[in-house]
Image (cartoon, rainbow, N blue to C red; front, side, top):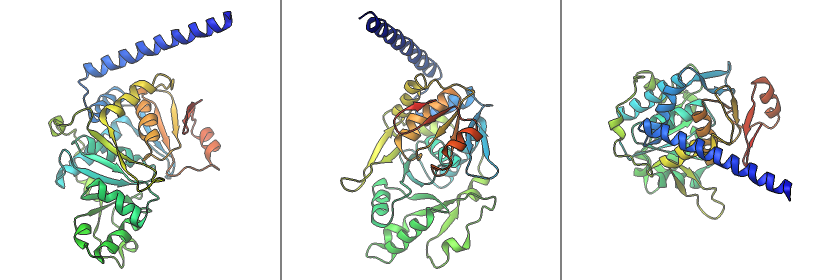
Amino acid sequence: MAAASSSLSELEAQYRQYDELIASKRAWLKQCGVVTGADYWEALAERHSSLPCIEAISVSPVRVLSYREVEQHANRVAHWGLSVGLRQGDVVALMSENRWEFVTVVLGLAKIGVTAAMINNHLREALLHHALSIANTRHIIATRSTMPAVIHLVDSIRAGPTPQEAEAWQLWLLLDTTDSSVPHELVDGSHSAVKSLAEALAHCSTERPDRALRDRVRPRDPMFYIYTSGTTGKSKAARFSNKRWIGAGVCWSGPSLLGPSDKYYIALPLFHGNAMAVALSPCLFSGACAVIREKFSASNFVSDMRVYGVRRRWSNHAFAQ
């Protein structure tokens, strides 16, 4: 009985400690004037500016970006969005592997009040059509490996009874090479017009856009859409609010025990809520570095931990050390 009482007392003390920690974090965010997910990110980018933010291990050489560099690229994305006519309340579809650009696109769109619809990479044909349709988007960003499925869908729609639907979509290719032009083999034989996002971003400013560009965004407005699995019917776009993304960082950064010296391996796809919110948000809040591989590899998992000095990792259910 004494041991049980002692354990309960320890749990109560730990709870009070986390409660006080969360209260102090909320007070800091309030002091920074944080309302939206973009406000939250910008406060963290300033706080941790020189620290490593993302380590992308699927590219050669490995790419490490600081919080300042992620912020600058996100600013480019925001200015690109403005240049193509995106405004508060609009939606952009993103179909990408776990790449550092995935994060900067979502953050950059949030800076101008635009929601990212994070499409499951494995969707094809009718299921992909449904996901894009319910997103109500005019712009689709995809990678070299996911763009063929989008092009195939667009071409089939154009050949069908409602070609005007596909005509409204502008396709943007997120490239993974230093050559920013769209590969000919990707569009040969297709009538789809694909533009290079890298080329467009090269001409955009790295300066932070005016916060007034998102002045109508409220905490409960969607920062991004995460799609349900579709096991009980067509997948649905679940609204993931600004408040929820911020809250994930505030609440989970304590129990995760993450700190600025940590590397944090995110194994889940970033279009998954547990990855983008429950893993990435507390990682950013803590000033830790997110280690990401384009696609999870069971054969490389243990070696990744050793080679890249990972101290903590996120699986589907729990933080682990």
